[in-house]
Image (tube, rainbow, N blue to C red; front, top):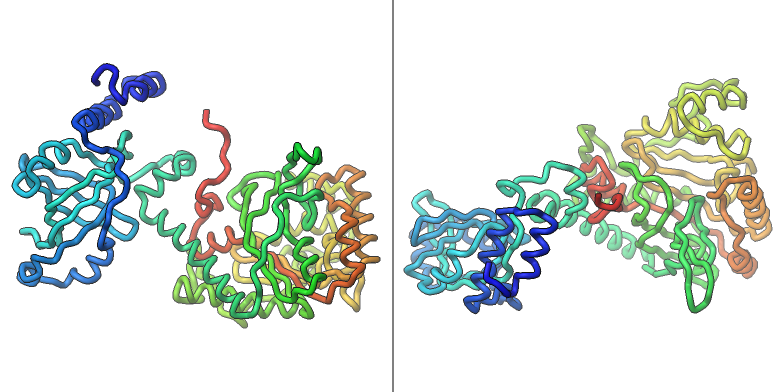
Length: 511
């Protein structure tokens, strides 16, 4: 390390935080030598002509003789060095871009001064741009013979050993940029996520739904039963909440005359973290005027089947060793109450005995609901004995009214609502219902929720006077649905944890 060099502050930082890490210090020394020699080690762009994948697709069948005839055709590619082997005056490397990886060949004879000044100082992790011609090696591997090289980014930290892996799962989440860099399957998972969202948008737009946007900052945390994140707006001197759901604003748009709308965006809930939960998550919420929750059942099956065919090529997918059939028309339906008996294995007698249910719930390590009503106890028992068993796509419907403050009551039984939740692989993926558009009933439900809040339930739904005023202007009958994008991506990418499908999941502070 030269004294007073460009890298002196970084050298000091590394020695103080990393100790005398020889691998890092060696890379800093190489970078310092290049910089001192007038080499731009952080270049500004490179004009590539091909992706590596496009070369492999178009040239993989070419023989050695075919390539000799095409010797005048130049290719310019970029990539990160994954492998490097030096043979004195010749070097073989493997570089990778977003599409694929391929071998390149660099020699003193072709590169001259560039070989001596730059190539000898390159290492695994560096990003380069190269131009050259294709040929086949003695082992018949398609290779780019480099005639020009530009160093684009000098890497200052060694990649995990043999570039095969971060094996510490938390470190992979924390340093996702490295995880993505060295695990092609991780990058592919996030590309697949993008395809899933694009397919969802395409389907809904073809069904005449309009994509809209609603606020992230709410003055009232409504639209779902959950604990919000709180913040403060200094200029207005008012408390605000990161939204827990876009529902109430989307319904205001129905009042305003929109008939088929959807929004794909973030929601935030100040709750626990698990393999199924992240405090920041993505949902698609859609609203359809003059439709019912039964119409949404049909639409949901079509939507999921369309996405599966578009992204996976089939409606029968594999998730954690299980075959899941997403073919429309094959999904199961069972009422909430009957699921407690037929799947949970409980009797009518037990399901009406509050004391017995309370003992059972506590035995399973769950706190008793604040409100001592049978519906809330049934919800706990559903979580204990039913949810995990719903592997194939299953609609649970006819939820108790007490559990559904925004849903329309069933016209034949006011104790239940026209609502379903969709479960696949033992977890909820969607929630939908015929929307409550009666402002009187809605006010009474809000008031009931406020009683719960005063009683200690900090997840109870607040009373939203502006939303009630909107309903008083008249909201058409409608059905609405929320679909968990992260959980859908988990399903279609065979990912066991929600952290696997969120690029940068929330983690505890490092150290």
